[in-house]
Length: 368
Image (cartoon, rainbow, N blue to C red):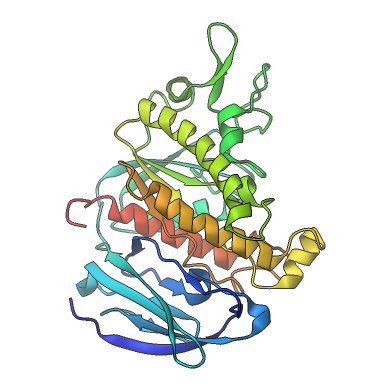
């Protein structure tokens, strides 16, 4: 397919003179008519703002348009299908630094109408806040969508009617696999993983079959949506990939074990892995939360490396899909001024829109 060059955009972002700019895109970007979708350029690159080196971005895609900080799409009905997307970054002198490609997949607005889907969302504090699960529910409840049911033992006070999940502040892949309280809590409490039960010898083990029997009436979700990674890797030393990768290696070991058990219990379900979201663009937000212990630039280096490796690790695994939640999130207007990693309502809605657009794509996988 020939590209139509939409725009060349300038964005004041940082690139270290002693380090190349790293550009990373996931295999697919999902969209639905009537739901805005964006690729924020600053979220796709690793570049340090303190050097204030202006970078030029060129987007090539036959749909959408470019603004100063993003490519944006408000898809129309006649744009459904697959569209090639290329992003290239240049330095201030016009030298090409790096280019990456993806595919924009636009699902029909009525895709899945009349179908009933069962969802389960697993995550950390971003899920516990319940704002993006609420947005998924709101979008799925609009006309010409599938009917839906969300499974989960957790229904926080901010969750809307019908919005249940397994999202807990501070949780990681490892905690969902190992945390166990012998007295067993009430559903939705955080002193024990909802998926861990004692076996016949009293040894705690992951048992998704028992979880489904006790909490979902034996039904398996059609789609699992998993948003984990921040708590697994936030404390990594951000000096270089060599210091970051050991934390990510440990996370993948835990993730693979949990996913193996999940796949055995629900072999026909699709699993969507949310690519870890970037933090607030403001240094002051990280200072407000962590003082000097953790910085915006440190987390950005960890998060970008984590996304690179999530894409590589999960992209070819059967039944596992990557949800590009890291791209459609405004790191300025989508965050409050005083929180480093937790978005405001605008940011959470952007996350919800990205996941909703992926959900819609699952009704026609053979054509997409």
